[in-house]
Length: 190
Image (cartoon, rainbow, N blue to C red; front, top):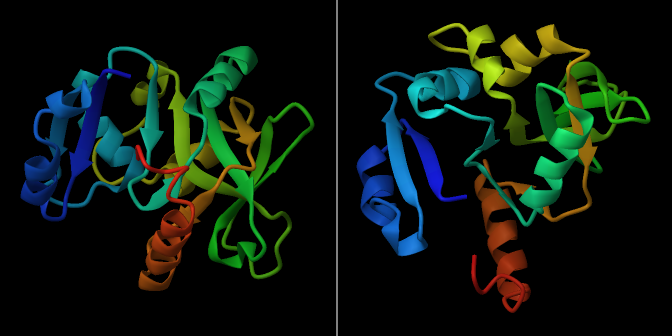
């Protein structure tokens, strides 16, 4: 990947100062500012003019070592509109879960179930056909709540056993830092 778009809301200047135009990483970075929160799908819609071909969405509140090439290959093999990276967790009650058939076709979504029907969770990483943009209204939109439930039959999930940690809490952030420090040889280039 040589072209990256980053949607920014909170402290955008800090991110832009850190990554600049992307040339230090052999890529071009384009920034899309949100004056008010737009949600996961609304942020992508805000970058619509930049997205002129199929694209990958990676949420910024997780750490993973997923093989993006394998996810992209899976997406084109199954010819869905969306492919979701998925992993199994021990306690799915804090996450939205998915149910899928043997081919990987997602048959249902259940948001943060009190009685888990699955332990397969959405990692917040998607490969998307550019045509999805026409189905996302402007303004605040969330993929898991507003968009994906209406697209059953055209969404696939690829189950992966890669390392993944939602770093949305201080506890999980510290645990992830400890994991990376304990496996530093593996993550030296991250």
